[in-house]
Image (cartoon, rainbow, N blue to C red):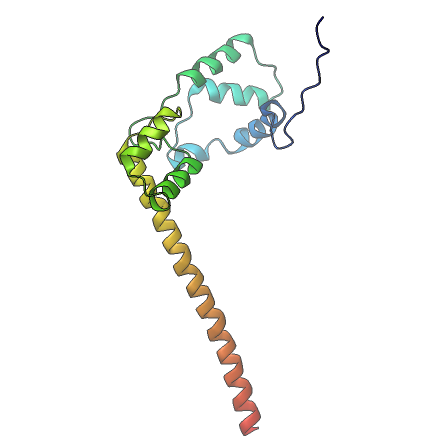
Length: 164
């Protein structure tokens, strides 16, 4: 006997692309002229697909197949980051808190299915480290501004109380 199938629970944070694609397409159709100015290239197939979705036309099976093949064939170009932000922060944690070297981290990520070189790991660790340092410096500057403003208010209050 087979067991009755239980309904699958959906993750409330999971976003279905089909529901937000028309909104993205409408925004794209309005602002697609800005993208080349910013230095990004949109493949013509994706451009035509987004424009047709924005106009309300249904996607043809050919367009769907083109998008699938293009998504499967996407590989990072030279110089593009191959690590996600989460992996970079994990690498930073493993390097500074666990004491692992960049080669060990790269090998571990490769075993986990995220191939990257030790140089990429080192570059991202340095980027995260610099962000954390600048964040601390910015926080100290902000505290200094608040204390300086409070000091000026106290000084003005004292001058006003003393002389007037």
